[in-house]
Length: 198
Image (cartoon, rainbow, N blue to C red; front, side, top):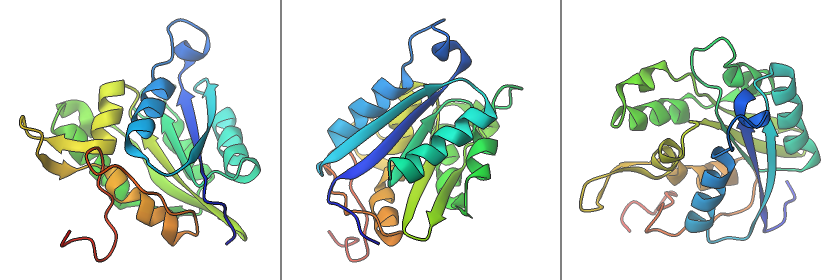
């Protein structure tokens, strides 16, 4: 697959109340800030703020994947058991492959902080077309939970105890034909084959 060195990352905040202005969206700012700290490689962000409507979520995911050519899409919000929470269903609707290990690790990390993480229905998927593929991850809605999920669990002295999911994301993107992503190890150390002794 042909790609440029700049990774295009889609950020989608899914919330009725943030969309209608009841409160300010905190998901996209939290994601943008974390990525700016963690990712050394050049990247471009495409952002969307939408309500909890399955059709709108699907439409925006497809546009980001196929029109904007994102290699990674991060959603925030809409993954709980509430009646309006439909982000996982919309994500699965556009998927060609599921990545259950990433979803399991997201819940595993969150369980170190809140017991209600078992209620999360976050999914991780890949959407493939003949000439492009994108990794789509459903992240939590709260800024602290977003950072914890991406970065992992640290001891009080800062030692990493449980790796965050972003440790595996750059290698996954390479495997599906996307650009190479370099990260700042103090925030998120990327794992690739051969790095385990580093």
